[in-house]
Image 1 (cartoon, rainbow, N blue to C red):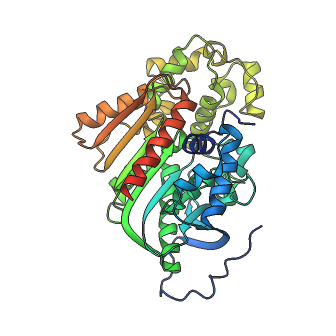
Image 2: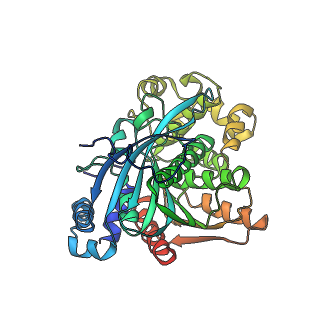
Image 3: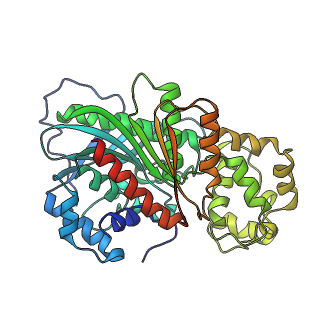
Length: 407
């Protein structure tokens, strides 16, 4: 049964199609004299033929779309090798080193390949086995199916779990925190490139970034950090970014001014409580939420609470944000703004016009601000009458077809 919080892989495959052992290559592959700097460990999770991939992806998507393998096989060009890796990165609250995890999928054929970094969408922490590195012969690691599909279409794909999942599941996931999402994704990409060197896999020089929802936010954060700090290490060919919440201040004001029930209000609560912790504001839940709701949310962010923002949030907190007097939280929002900068790389934005989870004004504001700064290669594709779910399906179709044409 599909859940509201986990949608991207199901949507991708439905739209496009209508246990492990230690890597045996690790000790014997001496083709390249290279010492990894970020990559910590590798595990060959499996090798899949083209037909096996067609069967797996068709079965995964068929639950939602009723499709068959014959159509799936038309999309695929090769088998793949799937690696679970761990790598070194930084935890955001105390800036301490941690070992995170992710999935790397590599075409099982000779050749030179474009590199794709896929940032997954929202996964509730209680359902972390949907994270990419859990990819196996069952439906676990569902987000890994995106990486697997792209790899079976001729790309090397890096797909980070993010902090809070996989090897770092003991940590709280820093939901919608731009710096740590970017850092984890960039370090994962570095580790994936190191894996390719160790395995003698040739990368052709093209780098694409893709992601939807939280993955769209993470992708924009990653692109911004690469272009501002790591442009000598990575050259982005193009990014394909769907339904990201790029303007946190405008988004917060939209929520706090809303007078009707918001279906996804618990996710906005998750963002708020993440910033409260990461930026060490450390206010009690009762500062933000009315008393009965505060108690529930402190025990479970996804507890059933009043969905009307006027009844959920404490009036003084609302006033502080709307009047501009809450300097601490507004500074946290600003640190996560991803719209007011000038991308150099080709940047393709996508958004559904009826998205009631992440309203389209996020993409519109980003497009306007970036163009005002002189960004010449930014575009926005709008999906008419599409909500967050149907827009996700259309986004993945568009991104996949664009990548196929440019590989």
